[in-house]
Length: 142
Image 1: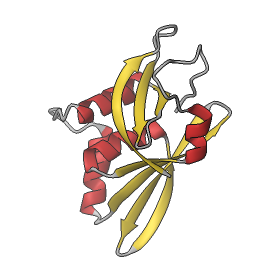
Image 2 (image 1 turned 135 degrees about the vertical axis):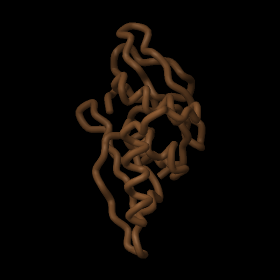
Image 3 (image 1 turned 180 degrees about the horizontal axis):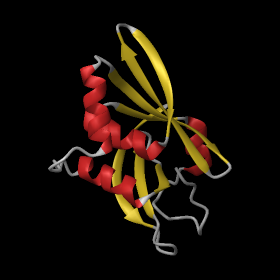
Image 4 (image 1 turned 60 degrees about the vertical axis):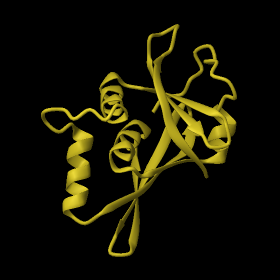
């Protein structure tokens, strides 16, 4: 697993799809196509905006906190048939739990909680790019 950070959000020039860009610690960028609502959730956290009412990731973070559960990390674990898969690694009372999740939701939550973001090396080999050049229509989705 390679540590990563949310670098930015952008638009895919050909389709207008929203893309979240993750920069792996070892250099490559992982572009993931996400929905517009998920982009708003990530953008709000990325820009440290506080909406007047909690967005879903804010609500989930509050519930985790209330229950004494910590989000340790988010892992982007697989790219299968054009779809990325992620999991949340949660901890409560010394016990770790992993929960299947969409990368876009996971990233929005990680940005709010300060949790580490990791990308599987195999995913980076499959879809990472050294320079941000969108492959013609072959970007996978979350």
